[in-house]
Image (cartoon, rainbow over the protein chains, first blue to last red):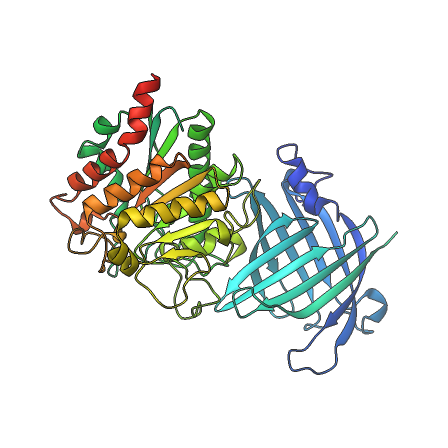
Length: 169
Length: 304
């Protein structure tokens, strides 16, 4: 599979590709789940690796938890996630098409994304719920990601999950 | 005021639900019906731009609860390009729909030239959004959501736009005229169908002009959903109702708005030739538009 990965953004849409492309690299993550029932948050470690793909027209990532140091002796179990995200800039729609394929539970998630101010907002509508995954506070070495849900059309949002990421050397 | 008119044909039906299983709404035929009834000859446009007909999908599209939501975004961007091109050439776009979802592309094209208000002439508020109906129960139809989407309510897919962001128009820059509904009314300046019946078109036009003046809105888009007409004078629409305007009242109202000099373009939506097999209503619609735009055409001729 030498043709999957790319060294940099496509010259066709370089500024758009860089919205996610700046995340290229390997990150250590602290993942916090905020249960809707008010029970205390739950935290796990993880790792997140981003890179260019498909001749630089896409940015993909691999999302995994737990982090290598916290893996069981026998290796990652079936219910511990190792998932693939694919993001492709669609010039016809002037937004990103996004797909996540999880291997732990077979999750397949589709979303659309745009840069809004200094954040990248991904969204999907599922039933009466809007779900947003937002990349914010992006620096060279850190970023914050949040997974929020609205059941009132975007008027209010509940934080389901967040990630603090730190770039690995 | 613009120096000439461009006609932009937007043969859309993607914002409407199927009228029956396996059938598509017929609004996409309206531009051709109006042109066949002589609209081009009456307006003498500098250009006739004919956009492609978007494909209609019965099944839901991925990650959206708006029917044809992905297709609608793609074609909204194309329509916006056409509207912007006309405005950049200092001409007046007359967009022939199609269903009311064409409003998004019209406003987006107009907004590329700066702030732009909206006069939303419609028998309904078109203000459905995920905050006021059960999006899980059925797919949303953008033709009933266009004012909500234009004011930034709804999915990112149809509310965040290149160059403009969100919203396309602020609530305070919207004037809604002619709706007959009392539920979930939008937080905009509003003159109902019942109020028009009480006070008359001339009074409403004066109050709209005053509102535009108060808001210092020099650029305003005019959306004409033909269901603002009473169903007794135009039944060939998706959701007919009463009370409503008659053709002379609509002509007078649009002419009065054009005369303010603030209207930069307009769209005409929701006439469905499938509900009018002989196209008997195409001629009065053409008469109405041509008469209402006379102040604009007169200005054009005077400057020519």
